Image (cartoon, rainbow, N blue to C red):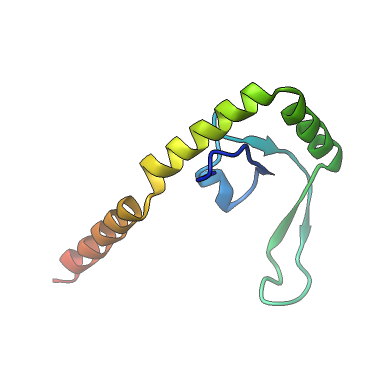
Length: 103
């Protein structure tokens, strides 16, 4: 996204904080399955739609200008909302709020 490239990603969990219809291609989830082992045991794993992925990849290749526009929007969003300076300010504010509530 930071490189102005179109992104196709699963519409689930953390990425939904920064992926939007305007800045990316959201891949629908076919089903959820439970992680059965390892450190994420008991959590849910999103299984994206392989058919929808094929369709989105074809769409991107057939609609190059639209994909470029989404890529530009993605970079704009990353720069304006998630740059290191902006994220550092958010973290600093949260820490300051915690410290203020302790005293």
